[in-house]
Length: 128
Image 1 (cartoon, rainbow, N blue to C red):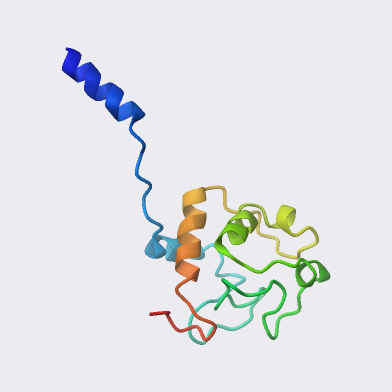
Image 2: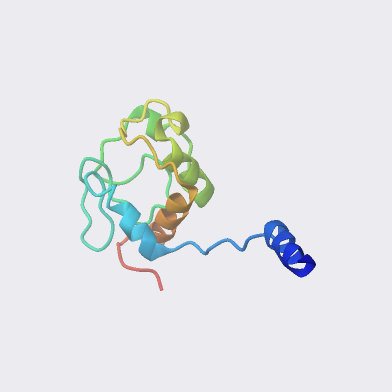
């Protein structure tokens, strides 16, 4: 019985290896965003801005989209950490945003969505 107990203890206290962020799973999560946003070649402004080249872009600057002053003046440059915080609770991150999406509660969904969005350059073409 001791070897079994030892194995159980080791399993319980061994650090878990985090699953890698999954762009394919992120594409599925992005379906929640499709009503307002587009990404990829030919993406157009919808209710919200297109999300091509989002990582590294200053908030409130996508050409052709009418942002709130809150977005324009937020001082945010989208990186993975800031985007993760925003996707968790947009209105808390940028008070005054007109984005009505309540946020994504699952950290894994957020990480997968970011992995998906990171694939697209400013022109909407997949990065190599």
